[in-house]
Image 1 (cartoon, rainbow, N blue to C red):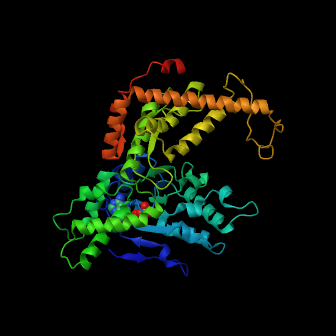
Image 2: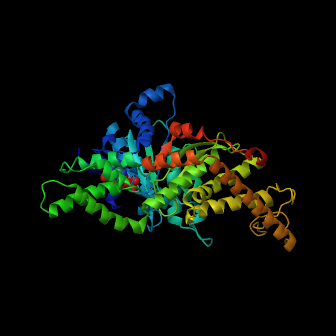
Length: 480
Ligand code: ADP
């Protein structure tokens, strides 16, 4: 089916493109978890009455969170394609620098159209451009009226339709942390789905999708290409296939060969290195030991949740790998040994590097910052240090911003240095414990790191089977 243009008056016609997207879930690969979660939305759009009869509430708004080029827009289109419903889209950045009132009117118009065409999908790309937290986005001297009006209009539209009208709002952002919390309240974008960069087998699957459209020579090995492209998002892989085809054409070939792909990878890497990091082998190994170090130390710490995922798929300059730990339950209070355990887990990455690589990298800076902050809070805010006792020594609290209470009495130099000593003591102890746990489990550490290097992501049961084997070193029980 063709793409219908449903422009509003003289406003920018690009804004509303509705019609059959022609995209299905088969076109999206390497994001199986997100697809599985979104299947429910497809089912709802297809069989709305089943849900309405049961009185089930379907989410109104789903936020797709992930780095650029991972397939968020593609997924939104695929939902519309799978359900056979119209697709309306708008981008948050289009509202920047518009005249006051135009943005809000446009949002109103969009929802009017959508309600008439329900069931349908409304997709808002770059939600952060529109939905930046009002406090963070505005200068203290006055706000961005236009953006704020548009945001308010969006919020009131979302509140104004019942969850069973058949309009499903999807939205995408790579900066969920800047969003106005009002957007994330129940009844709004209360469901979030992570669309991450793909692991090796995901990259292979994405390459396969895009290889459908080009003539390939028999020597092309997609698994090998997947192994050579850690950190590539779906859009980079689509680009890779196309670049390789262009190179083949330039060489007057009838099919794309492996050497075209290799040349294309080199070109793309040169471009990517500026934007994000592509790791060399030693860096990858360092990151793998670092992440497994967190996981092994974390698995023995009291009250720490289960470790659900470790990944060495690079994600931008800031994080080369990560360890995802889910809390066992909502926690409002932590006890002192849990805090000390968290500090040890944070230092587990550094300790693993020391133990295995023999020298440390800059990769632990964020962990060290967090561990130090935590140790500082332990002493100065939670009053858990035996030496200093239950007193507040919060040096960061400002008498101007804090609002009430007495201005803080300046700390004496003796107390200052006592605090520093206590913080250092906590960190040193945690570091020592992390090192001891890893030394005691060195064989396991190496084994898991090798598997992680091979697969890039370990999650769920796989990971638990390994972590169940972590042995408790003798001195741990004294420490906690
Ligand atoms: P995002 O919205 O996350 O920035 P897009 O959905 O716009 O990314 O992706 C741009 C293009 O990259 C898509 O049209 C598609 O060709 C390719 N692409 C991205 N992710 C995937 C994926 N997971 N599977 C297949 N192709 C993908």
